[in-house]
Amino acid sequence: MNTLLKYKPGWMQLLIFGLLTIGINFIVSILAVFAVSNFYNISPAEFKAMDLTNPTLVSALKSLQVIISIAWFLVPSLIFAQMSDTNPLPYIGFKNPVPKIFLLLAIVVIVASFPMVAWLSEINQNMHLPKSFQATEKLIRDSEAQNNNLIRTFLDMKSPTDLAIMLFMLGVLPAIAEEVFFRGVLQRLLILLTKRPWIGTIFTAILFSALHGQFLGFFPRLVLGIVLGALYWYSGSLWPGILAHFINNAVQVIMVYYNPHFFDEKDQNLSVLMVTASTIIVAVIMWWMVKISQTRFAEVYDTDDDFHIGPRDQFIA
Image (tube, rainbow, N blue to C red; front, top):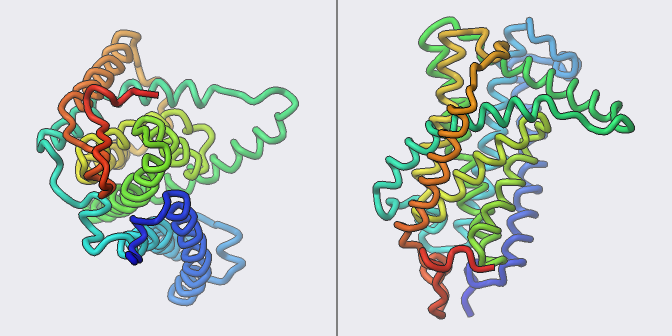
């Protein structure tokens, strides 16, 4: 009897992955806070006060951010992959994309999406809950303002060394860890359960955006998640999504490095033509990805049947 998880029912795999993630996150979060606070000699009261003018606290928070990113996303995903297949890294997508042009498409589609995503972000920022939920909206906006202040503090870069550190912390690490977690494992499981790539991709994108806990950035992150999910499924590889995710984050970090007021500038000069062109280009590239994809359901999930989700039947409901 085969004990590899990939041969178990999809719902069981998802349940095990969820329990694994929750358990590891709970344990590592406690240990990480304890270890970081002791290393930097930061008291629990100082953590709670969140005095971002304290450079020692900021350094501690940066270290904590790195540890949490690895523990929350990368560790449970790699353990799950190890339990699922004898070749765990290729199993979750660490292999060459087919065809390799997906690497180029990843760069083009993410850059082309910038105006569209910026417009969605502006729309999202101006959305309001019904009057009866004003208190809830205030809590959401206050929480996100506090989080934005933390990010701005992290992005207070004085030298090329600071830039390199932030590119790793906010660019490289999230690109790898989040793509492994959301696309390499979670999306893979949701597509297995639904047997419909677009349904699994959209559900994953919703979770990807929701779990970031930022209501005011939900819709642009949702669209980003759909693009990243399509890159993963249609290329059969994590690398195009990791590349696109890194570029998306790195461009913002670099913009802040050269213009510290980048996030505070409200006027983005987004014309209707620019947003429309951005949307059309992204749609055309997504359509082309479907056409050139060589992904086969039976090969991805190592099944004995010949069920094929290819260019002609991707959208069957």
